Length: 426
Image (cartoon, rainbow, N blue to C red; front, side):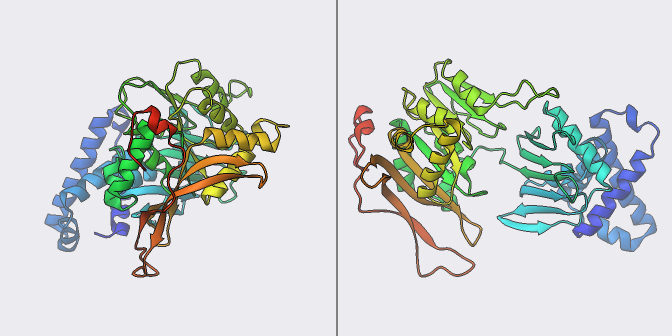
């Protein structure tokens, strides 16, 4: 059965069940059971009355039938079409451009769905439901909100009048199982040798920034890196919307920002949380992403006894990440001399790992560099590339073939390795 026929069947079953006078009296399990029974009755009816319809319905396997029943349930009690879409485990991103246009990403590629919401009003009701369930608010006075769904998926909502073609919803989904370094190796993002080096760097408490463009896998990579943090340390994570899946640490505190209330007060920012985290005796601080003035607080934390801290940032290259950090710090410390900012960055950040999404939609680690010192004569922060991605001649327009290779540059900042009692040369 194709997607169009599935959507029609879901809509038909939804209409039949919503017409039942007792539907509002049933609990969620009963509604799901009712949807399952309705589908089976539909198949039995087709067997007796319509050979052509039965031929189509009988081809549904167990997975298809479960998906349709859950989609009917979602359309009645859950998130409607959105709930149907995110029930597909292969979907990694959902983009809703108004109630009629829905795009999904699977295996790194975008597809437009035949599914659509019945009206803009239905989409607005669903948005209000999951935003309010997360303790947030969205309306014309606050048309932009970042939140998450119950399964941990990250959601960005933009409503009219800011969004001209109706409510816009972007959902970034994360795997139920946390990303591991072994999986990164299997995907070809890093090599076993690089994984071993990253383990040593994390255990030795190097401060690490993961940079990359949108969709390059920064949060996923950060999750994998967290697996190397020793189990007996106290970790504090700070995020706009909780996405990190750090599961191997017992002594962990998870903090999340809070938007302002209807009266414009009560907002709690990343900066506020970093300052509060410093009073919680953390051994490491993990900031999901720095975007603005909080970069200054993050760097100061790295410089004041919280070695081994991790964070991510949007950038197109390693040099771009350093430039963006300068800009972000300056927004949080107006009047601070640029030279002082660069010195602060050079002394706080030890390693930058740059990720990229390539032309074949694969995500690769492009570069691992160590940040050295600030060169006052050349007015720049010196970096030392340790690993670089090299594409081979076997690559094509549709397939990137290459590997992350060690440069000939020896690692220079080895004092943390020495402090950790590690004699290995990286």
